[in-house]
Amino acid sequence: MSVTRAVQPALDRKVGTRTAARFAHPALLLAGIVLVALNMRACLAAVSPMVAEIQRTFGLSATASGLITTVPVLFQGAGAPLTPRLTRRFGTERVVLGAVLALGAGVLLRVLPSVAALYAGCVVIGVAIAVLNVSMPGLVKREFPHRAAMMTGVYSTTMLVGATMAAALSVPLEHALGGGWQASLGAWSVLALVAAVAWLPQVLRARQERTVPVQAAPAALPKAAGTSPWKSGLAWQISVFMGISSLLVYTLVAWMPTILADHGMPRGEAGLVFAFSNLVQVVGAFLVPLLAGRMTRQRGLALAMAGLNGAGVLWLLLAPVSGAWFSATVLGLAQGGSLGLGLAFIVLRTDSVLGAARLGGMSQAVGYLVAAAGPVGAGALHQRTGGWDATLLVLLVLAAVAAVAGWGAGRNRTV
Image 1 (tube, rainbow, N blue to C red):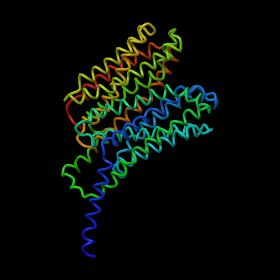
Image 2 (cartoon, helix red, strand yellow):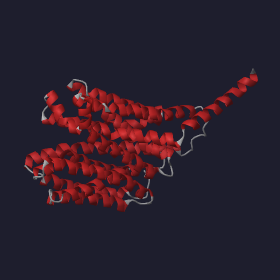
Image 3 (cartoon, rainbow, N blue to C red):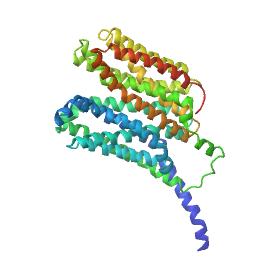
Image 4 (tube, rainbow, N blue to C red):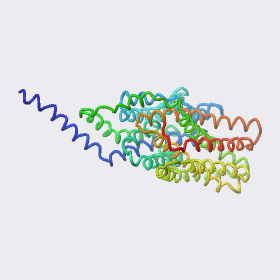
């Protein structure tokens, strides 16, 4: 009996190690990351083609309708700083699973027949995406330490693919399901459920790994754990770069088709130009992190992204109709590339998983709070001036500020 008692813990650890190894298969992990990433923008993009129908259903004003897309962005910023505490307490795998399930619940809550439920669902969606936004860079850094930049490109590209797919399928789903906008938007909860099932093996693996003894943490860890990115100039430069880049994206997502239509382009063609710009973002989001990972300094890359943003906005100002397709191409490359580069900065400018989580929490809190002001500010400026020139000039100035911040963020230093 005493021999059994002595041997049993070792057997348990051995079984736990084998189970963990089975669930640690790279294909399972990659499938989980891809399916989670597909959800991270899909439910936001799916609602844009449905805003007018939601407005008619509830009798909302134009301002109240705008909050349907603004509230999730605001709560992405508000929820981001909470994530590092959650991951330290519960583990990244369980936090990601909980966020995906919460995202699916928010999608269902948003389609209930109540204005309060509509906005409550937007809040839940925003917080869930905030948690995923912050968790994923640290997880990628931990699981793919030598290919973190490449994997950042994979999941940032997948996010944009999910957004493009959702924007394209929302109206066809409405017709196919026959339940109006509620059925179309509610259907995206299925994608969240699929992602949760695909992520479950990672939660089981993490649980099994906790039964295996681990080496003591290095002596430097307590010092790193107490370091706050909020006191780092480099962290602020990364945050400003991400914030302005996100503001440019969300402002043009909200207003680019309207800008083109107001200058005489047919609305159908304006929609096609906008969809093409979103598609081109996928190229930038995939290639730029790959290039960033091959460089010790990314200053030139950050300047290139800010410069392309400025060039696209300038062309939209000077030739809004005749140069629309050129603007769409340049802005798509710049916006997708800026997203990928901002996420790559999180893994390249930190030397630990905890550091990546903390920098991600700060940069995305600042980024999304800044971004939320873009669509509202652009609309207010347009209403005040009666045109779009002033708005586009402000975006040009902001692109220059992003270039300065990106120059600092691209230094070969860590937070």
